[in-house]
Amino acid sequence: MLPMAPAMFWRSPWLKPLNDTTAWNSLLQRVNATWSLTDVRARVLRSVQECRDVVSLYLKPNRLFKGFIPGQHLALTLPCKGVLQSRSFSLSQAPGTGGVLRLTIKLKAEGVLSEAVGKLKRGAVVRLSQAGGTFTHARPERGVLMLSAGSGITPMIAMLQDWAKHDTRPDVLMIHSCRDEADWILREDLRTLVHQWPQLKIRPVFTAAEGRLDTERLQALAPDFALRDTLLCGPEDFMEWIAAFYRKQGLSRQLKQEHFQARRTEIRPDAARYEIFVADGRAVFHALNGQPLLEAAEVAGLTPVHGCRRGICKTCTCRKLGGTVHNQLTDTLSGSGEEWIQLCVSTPVSNLHLEL
Image (cartoon, rainbow, N blue to C red):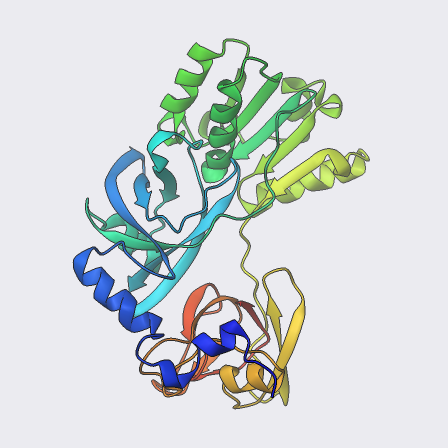
């Protein structure tokens, strides 16, 4: 008889409740709400109003957080009207002493998560993912052009702060577009950076008075743009025309961009089967119409962590990045964006992207 693999051994029902991480997490969090065996949890140290409808959350994560590279983002998860909702936000401050994280978030009037963020007080505890993303740029060897609009400035600030710490600082030109000076997110951080780093060039474009940034003005503000590595982040329409302009110039290779466009898929309740993708876009298994995702994953040879299989223990909770599921326990449809779902009671009604 072959020996049991360590991971399978620890999941064995014979070891319950010793291997019940949900129970252990619940017990630990009665002592300290940030303690967990499995989840990155963080305490809100303070919430700062940056400008109109924008707040910065200063967070102290537990020891499970593995750190980040300036430019990366993470997912913030909060309970919203009885459902766990997740959204991705760039880290807006370079790594520093004490391990404090900063997320700078634009509060949208129609946003469910925005409402919850606006209510967070000092001492509240939130759930975070590990940092991820490739919108990073290690110490540049040539000039850099930063193009940002609105909250797209947040990952740029973290990179600039990181570069400012080093004696050899790159030649950086930032062009930032926003409605007016009152709408300029983290402008005080930029003023501090310019004081420390006089060679840093900042060119704001205030659209209320000057109109939107266009290719003619872009070339006037950055005549040497073709000689610089370009970092781009902002609303989708802002990014689309700049990406199209770079393609036309044959410069796409030197353009790096960051966006959090939802992985939306068409709801098809009568489809025979659905493809289940993971975060990097690989299709890893399929699920039949009406088949719980936990069962479909097991049929495909996967071994998701689970417990009761009835939607009670929540051991099989998984982050859905895109697509729509039907919750058999509550008889409700999920949203199409990021949410936490339970694999054992969720059946797909579209193709899905999951974080497995």
